[in-house]
Length: 434
Image: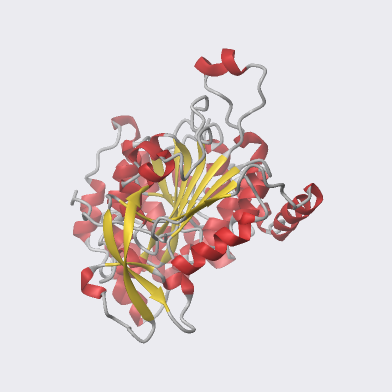
């Protein structure tokens, strides 16, 4: 596996941080907070119905998958080493037609497929895993639009909302005796690339008003506004203005100007500095690792990362405009103590102003911390270990996508996979046939 670049990442900036002084009263009433949570819940009522089907002899079509797409997904699937057959299966569904799309599919080479198939699986599961991989690849190629933008991420968030009572992470067995009389510790969400804090209502809805939130944002102006917004509202939120990467150093960062979308702010490679000067200003900003940021008591209050919990960080979310894998490389300690990871697996990973990282690198990094990796859509597509899919890094198959990592022994794994697996070929290897 190619080494990750010795760069950093983020959607963060200098060293401004904010934490509301404990002595300042919180003006927002419980009613107001409850109302805000209710709005977030109601806004997702429709989405929260996703993935209710369960597999039987003849599974029903999920409501969010078109009849045409469902028929394509249930058709006999191509072998992983037969790219031509995979292309034919895609064309048959009618999804993704067009010269550009067909040209992209030809890039799914036999060499890529053979490399993916060469990843060893346990002998007893090799055939089942291979069939699941082949079906997943065919689904990905046939339904590219279902992986685009925030649809998969919002479906996941709504599912977590629906099972929020099962997300309570009790103290580890060794700590039970000392905390028997204490209430459960507050959940902790670390949101890297928090932007304007638009995910805060959702984190509150899933994890409750008592949850601690660490919002890391690199765009100087956006981070300053975010800190000001929470300064008079919430002592369970800290805002850290910092770029996040895999080492401590300085990096070039572009700041949008004029009417350019602020979400295009991002770390830049040296080759891309100076491009589109009519849209961006370029500045050098300090970068730090996520491990360093979370371990710094001047940035994240002591006690928030509770050692009594098996996984004291309930959710790590990153949105780093293509630099997410580099950011995760600087989070080795954090990943060991995190339950779920939601990260943006973006086309920008592969472009000139990106770090040239891959899904395979991300999967290996996360697997070392005990995670399985999935590409998000109404259908989870697993891509770690024996499920490796080199085709994910073909630019024709990349876009504004999101990925999710969870542990094989997580108690809610069967529930999540039951909601997001609609390929019968993956039922057995995912352990859903028990």
